Image 1 (cartoon, rainbow, N blue to C red):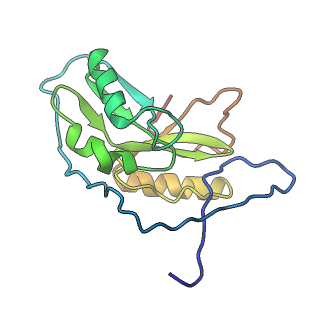
Image 2 (cartoon, one colour):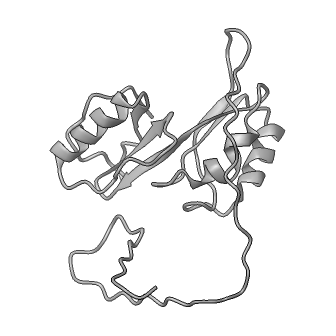
Length: 176
């Protein structure tokens, strides 16, 4: 529709000097398949024990090449008991597939990866993305408090050369 539009580019790291960006918007009247949001299945493993899983993986909903169905098949083939699909700054993979795919044999932990230039963190238990546009330590600490108040867990990711955590460390629940 006519009016003022905004485009958010999924870039979280930019060089110091200005960057030229061109955005092409193309309209089409061709019918497209609509993704149906899947209902949430709250699957639970029976009993205490040791469980095998992955707490940090991605699909093509962010920067991986595989579809959710491929990741699901791989997790089953490898005998995983649980899987947290933590695409960067999105939970779209949950509604498109993983909400309904969870079962007592393979539990899908809802979450996403909070991704900025100065650090990454997984947010476990979130079914929505908290605003990841932070400017400084205060913003990150306030965001972590909102996440934890919403009954989700805040876990700092891969604090190592290449992708260090450069913010003041907020109160966290775990660390990769």
